[in-house]
Length: 403
Ligand code: FAD
Image (cartoon, rainbow, N blue to C red; front, side, top):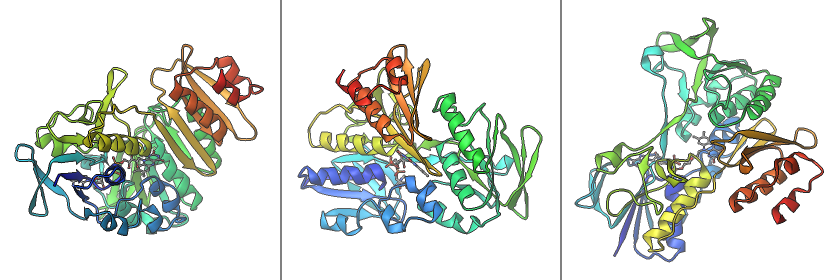
């Protein structure tokens, strides 16, 4: 009987095994996860779950019983420590298992602050997994002073939760502006104003020089502009790195993550990759995305290809972020844009449309699901409305789809 082993029981791994069974695969499936929890969704970890507004069970992608009912051998709390690609075996918890197809769905891990600047002090925390967030809960006491390092989505979401829970929040971003890597100045300005209105002290163009501590626990920070802060704890959100070490040790080519072809195959026979850990060819580059949508779609594509479909992965990037009462929805990739068109809506509703010349690349929609849906459909269909029509609020957005 054919045996598929999936290393990593997160969003991609869970999607892949479910797809295999849904498509009628009746061979053996083993899903191996290092964490002790059944596959769960991470986005609420920096949103509703951190806020205390979501039960843990609701994080789980499927009830734990699903795996046994579908004859999926789910092994939890069990890191895969070695892969022998010639013998087609993996080693997990001292046991050696043979595979016909192996999938890396190992995700990513957050960058840490170096120990030399105090990154190893007690109270310097990361928002990556359920364990991290459960452990940080008691520190979110009203009045506690927190420094958030990094003004990307995770840092900003954590800042919103901390401010809502009554903490005193300072956020430093060493780039010129928050969200600089991923969004236009207009989107940065929107979120800067939102956080400032909620009392968050946002400092842009300022990095962390070093942390200070007493008895091994963080008590303060010195910033690159020479200013200093007294602190109770620090949250670090300075980006992630794909989990590639195991794949690399197995002889798999690494290029911006585990390199795959359009079908999700790595450089080694019968080994595939999907999700945060995998890069794939996209418009002349080897792209890697860090999003739920990508993890699901790519994993399902790989499952289909394991079953012989030979389908090429056609990424349709989308993403979201919740901060206070604002839902940000993003479609497309803004890289290479040269113009932003702002479409004002009612109240706090607004959307930012990214163009390169006359070509629509991406949209950021703030509390504006209608613009988001139209923008997403246009981008996916390769259609570009005129920037003037987008800006003109008398334009019926749905009509743009028919044009
Ligand atoms: P993961 O879900 O990270 O799963 C990988 C799993 O592999 C992990 O459980 C890991 O422990 C396991 N693993 C690694 N190595 C081994 C090994 N050797 N043996 C066994 N197991 C191993 N995306 C969005 O689209 N929208 C959002 O709003 C959003 N918010 C986020 C908020 C937070 C706090 C975080 C951390 C992420 C967020 N993301 C968001 C990103 C999204 O969660 C990831 O892109 C998605 O989880 C990727 O799925 P994955 O399966 O590739 O990786």
